[in-house]
Image (cartoon, rainbow, N blue to C red; front, side, top):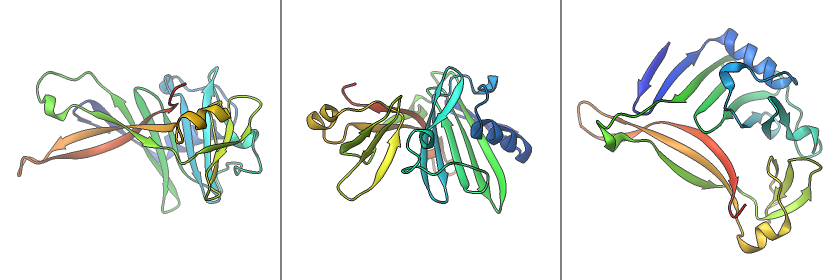
Length: 199
């Protein structure tokens, strides 16, 4: 079942499809065709948050490089998964011990209702220092509170000297209009990109 809001199509995913996509995400299999364009992964587990990145059609997880900082993902500890890129996001979550999900994909916008055009915003990723450089794409970063995460971006000390909080999570807000009041508000938000300022 799909529905459209200005700038995007939202498709509900059934339990069986969610489980198939999760099986792909948890093992090193080729990216399914429908997920072409997905670049990043963000997983929420009962015991931590784990970043991932798609390289050469494979999903690489931070726990492979930083096992002490990131829990290994499984069906037992995973609670939510977001796979995202410039034009779409796959969002799967556990609800009453069953998997459900949605796929949000950008669509071409018409000139009509331009006041509903989606807008991107940057959110600071909590990290003001490099703790350890990984052997591949990942870097272990943290802050003075002791919070730690392994991000799928190569970072160096200079990145944090010139800009104390250089890591950004880009989100896109899609708007809807209330037919009764005419008020415009955010209808849905999705993740778009992960980037480092100045790099």
